[in-house]
Image 1 (cartoon, one colour):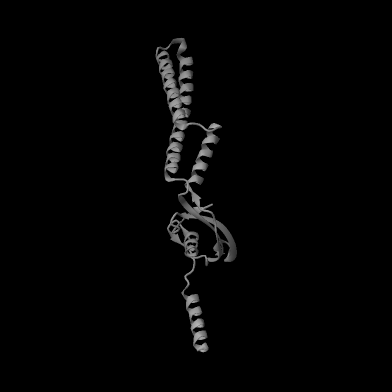
Image 2 (spheres, one colour; image 1 turned 60 degrees about the vertical axis):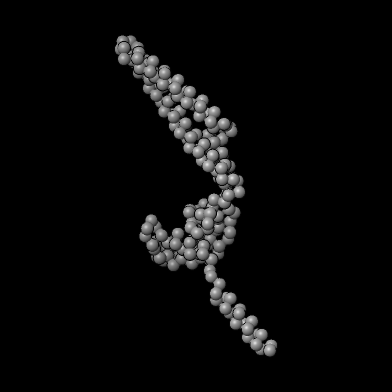
Length: 193
């Protein structure tokens, strides 16, 4: 009876060892690192180690974009109010441009002064419209992440250490370590950090 038990235990151990599938992230790293655009290259890549990282959540992205907003404006702002304020200033600039354009078209001694003022206010207007565009984009992105809920996982991260045979170094073996982020389902590498 003991022989049957030990034989069964050994057989089950062998079956469990051979039936274990490898980490699918190894295949993702291999495919990601050995593809340039649509071209597959063989670097004899071998993944040595994979270490799980922290997931990237909607809260992380929200903090990132709010930080960008603070960096742009020097402090936290109410985006809607700022957009309204800038739209008012753009309208004022357009009024000034129109007034100086009328003086410019009348010719005479005011032509050069008017031309200079029109150019000055056109440049201010372009800068303001650029700021409005950035604010509008940031507002859309921040609204999107706020609506997701803070704990929604957007990406998963992991660090992989692997070796390749570098064709640019006559096939010399290199060991590399990169941190990757994947889609929320953890089925595709989206980029590296």
